[in-house]
Structure formats: structure tokens, C-alpha cells
Length: 436
Image (cartoon, rainbow, N blue to C red; front, side, top):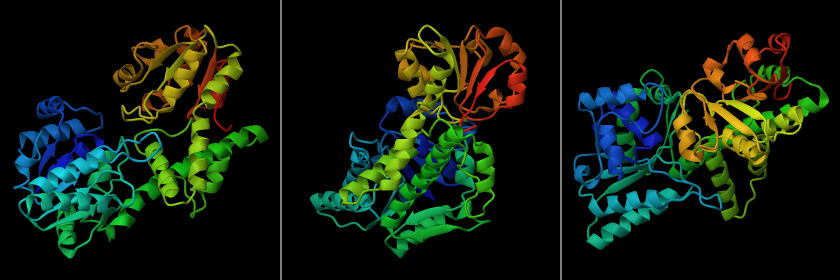
């Protein structure tokens, strides 16, 4: 089976590579010629565990290709997956210019029946806009070539994307015809042979499912952060509360960990887009609005704890462990670390940072306004406080004795609640957590 994937960002590159891994012949398309040249040399624009090896293996075995021109492969493929970006506009709505550009190129150039699948996260109703663009372009050509559109939202977790794609708990596909259903079923069947869970539905429902899923997960995070903040005020322990409510089978334990707010490419953007979709239809998404508000407030909790524990931050040295919005990725989009660093610099602090993967990405985003350290221990030398923002595994069991000797003031702000209070107190640290 031959397919094309347009867009070699996170979703497009992971999707195309995993399809190739399962025996599909995949051509990944991107207008960025520099990126394509690097990909053809096995150099990836993103970090995802296991992805580089998989890309290089499928490149060498000929199932994966990278090109800049969709037109050159349209005659060969049965399915085109559109995985281009949908960045938020100033009003929170999703910018569809790249999605519609793919539809325009598709309509201008197809010569046989092909399915155009939107894999990007898009608002409800986008598929119909895509369909109309294709029809308009074919009308200009004076042709009426059969085609189908479909919606196939992704549910990948950064840091575990390959596992999620190769062993999905469900595949959601919105379709309009039996012909498209059979083709999509054939494409995905190898992935779900052991647990066949392709959920076919109408296209608007598929589009809404993606936003609803991410907004629900974001809601659980903001809910738990709200509870954690109240726990601190009333003297309760959020960890005990989390265990207590997580034991209820109706609730479960996932996404109930308090912290310094969610970030990344999906939750912030999708929450904003869902709020905007409600606004467009005259409906206020009150719960989701509150989810976003709690999250924005939560991103400054670490700064407030530093301010409370140190008093005056001006001239103080603050060490930060973790820059990416979560472990196992270099993604810093909407990362809490960016907000915390900005607040610290505005307050006149000196900031030392370390992250196992995201240092280059941080430098690209904020330049040299912080000190980039070679390892976690260099970051805490002469530091007045340490803030742990991202729970990378290598941060789990540090040598507190070494850290106690090198820090100027023994203050730890643990934004992920990963350490043992008794151990840190025994080493002389003032230890602050979230909700405990």
C-alpha cells in the first residue's frame, strides 16, 4: 500500500515512520527543503525515544522517503494524510491556512480516486471546508474525479508516541463512504490485529473527539492542581487525596498528579480552540474556560514559592532542573519552565538551567539570558534555591549530600512531588512541594 504524509512535524514524522515500520510504502512531504535534506540523511528535527533508529531503518530498507513535492507522488498513492500545523491565532482559534493549502494542492492535481485524511487537530466543520476547496479546484480544472475525505485524529503522547502508534488503544476515523472505510480499515488493520478497536464514526464526531479527549485530560490536571492548592491552605496532603479518589474505579489514577501546570503542543492549543468553537456557536464552555484559567495561574506557583521562601529574589541564583514540558521530549511549547524563567529574570534573579534533551530548544527560544549547565550538579553550585520542573528519571535519586555541600542556601521547590521529605529534611534542606 502506498501513502503520502504531508507535514514532517511531530505527528507527521511519527505517523509516516510507524506506517513504514508496518510495511506501508510512505512518502513524507514537507515544503522545507532543508528539513527534507536532513531527514534523508537520517537527521531528525524532533526528539522522540526510538524514532531516529526507526527512521533510519525504514529509509535504508526503502519503505520511507522524504520529498518536497506532493504532486510527484499523487499518482502513486491511495491515501494522503494531512499532518500540517494548526497553530492558534490570537483569538485562540485554529489557523487552518496550511490544512486548506494541502486541500487546494490535492484538488488541483489528483487524477484518480484518492482519500485525503486530515490527521491534524482541527475544529469541527473543517472537513467540509476541505471538501469544498477540493471541489472548487476541480471545478476550475473542469474535471469531476471521485475522492473522499476522512478525519483521523492522533492520540500520541510525546515520549511514548511510537508505542502509542504501534499499539493504539483505539483508532478513531471519521468517514463519509463505505469505500473510504474499507481503505482506512486496510491501512490500520496491521496495528490492531490483537485488539481490534477501530472506531468509525461521522467526520464531525471524529473532529470533536480529539478536542474532547485532550480537554478532559487537561481538566483532570487543572482539577488536581486546584485541589492541591486548597490542600496546602487547609493542611491536607494532596498525595493522600489523590490515592483516595484514584482508588475509585469511576475516577482512576491517570492525569491526577498535581504540578506546575500542563504545557506542550496539544492541551493548551486544543483547550483554547474548543473554547473558541463554543464562542462561534454562541455557547460558553465554562468548565473549559476554568481549566485554562487554573492552568495559567498554576504556572506561577513555583515562582511564588521561591519568592515566599527567599524573600527578595533580586541577585539570587536559582537552579532549574527540567525545561521541557514533560520528560522524554525536547518540546517546550507552552512549557511552565518558560513562564518561571521569565518571572525570575524580571525579578532580577540569576538562573542556571539543565535539561537532558531540551537545552538547544531552550537556547533557540530565549537565547542566553540564562546559564546553560553541563549537568544537574553544575546547575546547583552556589545556588540559593533549586526548582525541579520536569520529572526526568535522572533527577529521581540525586546525591543530596553533594548538593547540600554545593548550594549556598538549601531550598528545594519540587514542582512534581517526586522526593522523600524525610530524606531532604535530614540533609538540612527546606523542602516545598505542591499541595503537601
